[in-house]
Length: 270
Image 1 (spheres, rainbow, N blue to C red):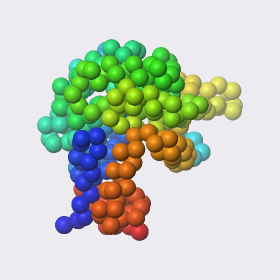
Image 2 (cartoon, rainbow, N blue to C red):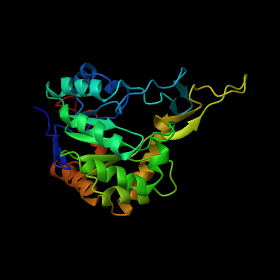
Image 3 (cartoon, rainbow, N blue to C red):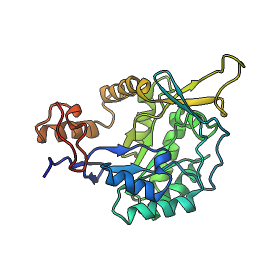
Image 4 (tube, helix red, strand yellow):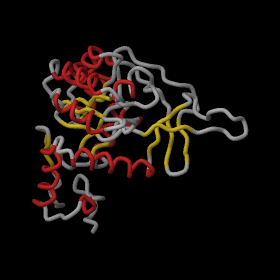
């Protein structure tokens, strides 16, 4: 029997703190089930809205130095179909966090309600997609709008609400504080950083959506910086304190020691 890696935050208990981030692996119930069986403590669905989106033309995902750039355009089939996917995974015992977005607070709330109906244990508000106009960075850079969206969703669902923050802001603590003040139960830090790649031969952007989100190893120090600033500002301090307590209770001195231990798999690395 492996070590106990269960963790509790925002009223949710997970078998381990490893959570599959929102993306293409969260597009179907079957894939989310596979991710859970592979050891994920929870999975976050692909972001979805009320009516769905077609997304951008290819190329939409490329490798760059230090990571990857994507400009998928948040393609999704809409909240009705995604509710079914969330339900498929939830019925198999997979802890699913429904990621939603919208063009206004009411659309965010409608999609969140549908995720809850599908059995999601929490909802994540994607207010930070860097390459989709009007639903992403335009919302995530405005604390007042983030607060409005958060408050509206909180009034419509009974499950915890997480707010996914953008690194493409002047002061991330200002946005985090607005989310907390509006009732957010936790934050997701962070979404991708805004980037771009140009074909040196043609002089044109490579991505079909022109601008893209940078992920991979290059994003890691930016995420660490964002988390540090939020922690230093004592925003959502109960969450960070809870992680410290989690490590202390298990005789671990660093989060690095749990790498490779998920769902009773692997060994402790020091």
